[in-house]
Amino acid sequence: MKVVVIGAGFAGLCVGALLKQAGFADLTLIERGDGVGGVWRENRYPGAACDVPTPLYSYSFEHGHAWSAAYAPQSEMLRYLQHCARKYGLEQHLRCGVRATHARYDGEEARWTVQCSNGEAVQCDVLIPAVGIFNTPVVPGFAHAQSFEGVAFHSAQWRDDVDLRGRRVAVIGSGASAVQIVPALAGIAARVDVVQRSPLYVMPRKPVDMGAMASERERLFREFDEVANRRKSTEGAQAAQQAFADHLERTVRDPDLRSALTPGFLFGCKRTLFSDEWYPALQKPNVRPIFAHVERLTPTGIAFTDGTSAEVDAIVYATGFDPARYLPGLEVEASGTTLRDTWRQGARAHLGISVAGFPNLFFMYGPNTNVAGSVVHMHECQARYIVQCLQAMAASGATAMEVRSDVMERSCDRIQQRLAVSVMDGAHCSSYAMDAAGRVVVQYPGSQSDYERETAQVDLGEFLMR
Ligand SMILES: Cc1cc2nc3c(=O)[nH]c(=O)nc-3n(C[C@H](O)[C@H](O)[C@H](O)COP(=O)(O)OP(=O)(O)OC[C@H]3O[C@@H](n4cnc5c(N)ncnc54)[C@H](O)[C@@H]3O)c2cc1C
Image (cartoon, rainbow, N blue to C red; front, side):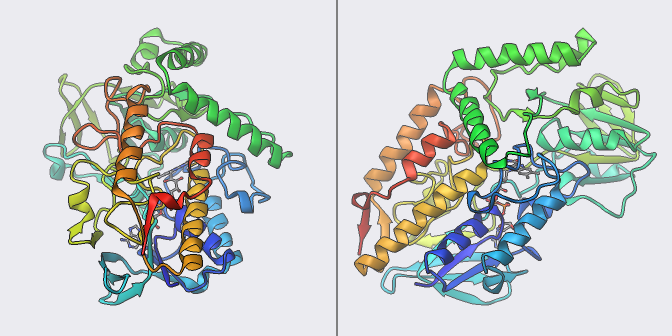
């Protein structure tokens, strides 16, 4: 069976490694970047590090790694993934610097043809998009943005050629990237203006005993499961909210700042962040939290709607990504339709992995599989499930495997029902997990354990095998 995986981040390498181990060696990994690593290759901003501890945020089949820190910095995460690509024999299957632009399934032949940016067409029996969801940078379209005469860039497109030491910098945003960038910049810049539209819940980092990695993995897994379980009900969220209020009281002296930093939505609705440096950084003399709304950019900085302004030399857009827009730049076509059309009402897939009408197509990190915990655990569940699917095809001699549409509809409806009674529902807040229509298409409603249970065993009765 010839398998093509698109993307060589945590997900692509995971499914590649497990497929190879299972004997599926006719494998090609198409990667548009110049190497493996995905978000850990792209996000090189100062302070970039994982916020789920590495004993958990790493592969279970490669977990004895000698991490230098519990929250490893970007360079180390990238080295880890490069090491895994080497160790699991994936380098020889890699095609870097090639973007997959279009994939079409031929029902007669039961084969996919993947069109690439270099003009090449790659054929395969099974296609696995592992293209990630946090890699389409979003930059707000501020009025007069072109008039700004300083330098401006997105956090995922860090300009190594720009020296921010001693400069006046505005960081726009208060999400996961800003929480890491601001403390790092506060140590070198003359001034950091932190422009925040809607503050998030930022909790202290979980302490980790790096001397007992295997048991720490278990313990952290359970702890993050509890975080996810709290999101299932308003009562759970309210208890966590009190813990946050106590933490803020301990770390931020000024009551006005505390009030401005208190999110206006229920705990758990949006992603909870973990940092020990964010609140201390915001109280440094050279750091200015700004809660006013941006009206426009000027040649020398930012004008706010309340009439105030900030004069800066550089603007860093820590404004995140657009995870609800699945597969940007990749057209997928089968059974006379496209995924874009099929997903017009929002992206959906059975267990986040398979879509009715699209045989021999299996997603890594597909719709509704982002979790409060380690995404790598979700990748492993998906990869094991996909390996089982391919083994079932090989064993039965089937050339095509497609999830039944009634199965997909039922399981996706159940996901939405579970989300509707959780704090992630749109009634509590709007978040990047939603598509334009307000449907939560990114977040999984349960815990890492729930997903592991749901994906542990492929039910072949849910599929059409031909
Ligand atoms: C800064 C940052 C920190 C994070 N920290 C954590 C954390 O601590 N814990 C956690 O659980 N999650 C974290 N995440 C979420 C993260 O997205 C996942 O953990 C995980 O790394 C995703 O891996 P992936 O392989 O699915 O996606 P990616 O890492 O995005 O990899 C996808 C790959 O596909 C390639 N690609 C995309 N489209 C194409 C195409 N058309 N053709 C060819 N190649 C293509 C991309 O170039 C990329 O290399 C973080 C995300 C970011 C951005």
